[in-house]
Image (cartoon, rainbow, N blue to C red):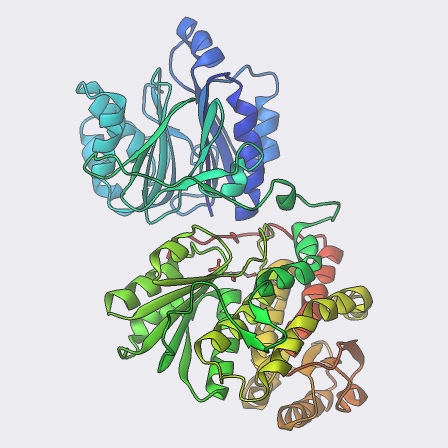
Length: 612
Ligand code: F6R
């Protein structure tokens, strides 16, 4: 999704800060990038020339923008930058942000969607305003310019423009000569970075992490004004809002690649550490009990509804399986379908939003609907201070560390572990078996993940099946979400056709697709009923000549029916999905690497999906 960076710095030289900030936001996914600067060198230069704010923007990778800036003296003491992920109008130089008014005195970057942009555009065009892009965002600089022309000061002009907007927005604007950034938030994240001699603003903390770790999260309806040495936040009526400055734990180093070719591979290898982070201080090995900070006041719910999207939805399916097993009424909903499903809510229903970023618009909307209908809500998220974390009644943090690769990896593993902890905290008898057994299984898991990472044959398997037509993934019970996740990861970063199925569903339709050219990955652990039945399904595809790869712990004889085997240690039923999934993450990664795909920024996708 689109990314925003802004800097107000007295020393000038904001251009490189903006470009580096945009590079830090690349992981969100984008198709064009741009910056606008004012003050300092830019102002002197422009005073002598045409006047106005300097803007540079380019379709494509950030490198295209950097190339366009070679030899240009563009720089200034305040600036804003943007990476765009198209919603209104195709990717192009003209549709890239920042957008300006006709005179180039105002520049604006925007994340979100202005729903009433058409009527505003018609109104402005009727007054003679000429538009230079197809975007919804361009109405904003024109509205600000109009208010300036009527004599409003820059801050009042910005506020007036914002008051005309319907929809969702994180907005940042600069006005020629004002020496400040004006910002507003509604349904799209915006965070301030409080520095020494410079203040920052971004859609996401990693944008400015090398400059400051002191942050202030804006809430919906708030406005901010930043200068080099001051910042303030006000509500919609202009009243000052006291904001807490929080220090984020993530370091700039954590958000680098640390020698790995891709963030995704780095994050796959960070899983042992991420899981230790999630477990730290939450399990008592002596007593065999679980205690999640901040959740002790939460009553055991009679029913749990999960809402989530994509990978997080697969974690929700796993969570629903655990709760169902414990006899608790539960369902996992795709967040984008939750409003239409309108499932009945009782006073004892807990609605759990699983969201790595805490900013996914569909999930936030489902949580808000649930709250609006009186349900208690809980966010299971990786991002401290995210919208989900702030809006829900309760929050549990994953503590997986920053995830930069668009494909979720370590956060999925952490979600599965986090769900075990959450469910034990809420319903101490949920494990049905020995809680100590579960606690010790969770304790051993990081080392077992390391073992899988060290010994995986995933790269060889990829060599064997390179060039196949389609790839299918099947599993049962707790391994059904793993099959779905294996297929999602695979299609997302390889761009090859992949589907995940409940193993038992193959014969109800998908089997028609199975041929010698469609490898089937089957997850089989233990030797219980699910394993036996999945082996039966493996035989069905084998009989149709499909190559079979089993991900197995070797407890059953599944390997006998397989062409290739990806081994995992024999572990607790609840932790086996994490290990099996690590093998499938590596399969997806190695296939994508062999195909030369843009692994960290798959085409058309974004890390944090802030539109519904
Ligand atoms: C896939 C992936 C997405 C996200 C989904 C929800 O690898 O990352 O499917 O899981 O967009 O994102 P969050 O968890 O941030 O709500």
